[in-house]
Amino acid sequence: MKALSFWKAVTLDRSDFLDEVFALLQKHGVRFCVIGGQAVNAYVEPLVSLDLDLAIAVTQIEQLRNPMPAHFETELFPHSLNVKSPGSNLRVRFQTDPHYSDFVNRASTREVLGLQLPVAALEDVLQGEIWAASDAKRRGTKRRKDLLDIERLLEFHPALKPRVPADILLKLS
Image (tube, rainbow, N blue to C red; front, top):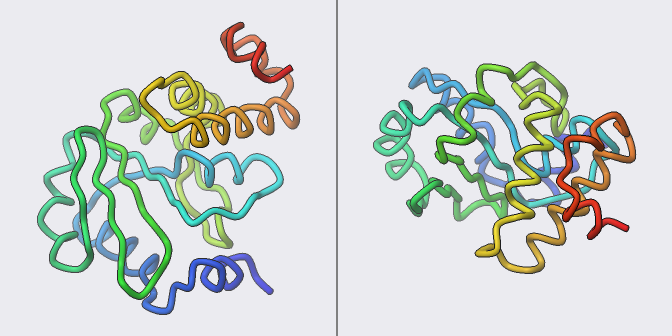
């Protein structure tokens, strides 16, 4: 089974939600890149997830606020716009925190879920996971998943280890 078919089966995406999200991004000229767990999957052995995190330039959030609610269920948070569809268990989170904005400029095309998508640079993916794992406001289970993603990146790319703060390295031992 091809990666995209497998992911659509796992997320029960019967509404072509993913295709529609990407079509809207293209139609409105929104530049984005994959971050988070799916970006980690682009650089190491993949794990299955129902989430797709995308970074966009902060200046383009207005280009998403209007069309997304007309097509999908949306929830706006201080640093993200979360989008879902009744016909899919997939959740798309547009990260609008200014920290992630430059990731879009450094992204390159890689395979994610059987699709060729812009993915944040390896060092940016690691930095995003470090920020997430260090955020005391995140649920403990989410922070542990972020730590696992960091550990997975270091396993495949040990040269990244000097970029990881000592307190996070301690949690990985």
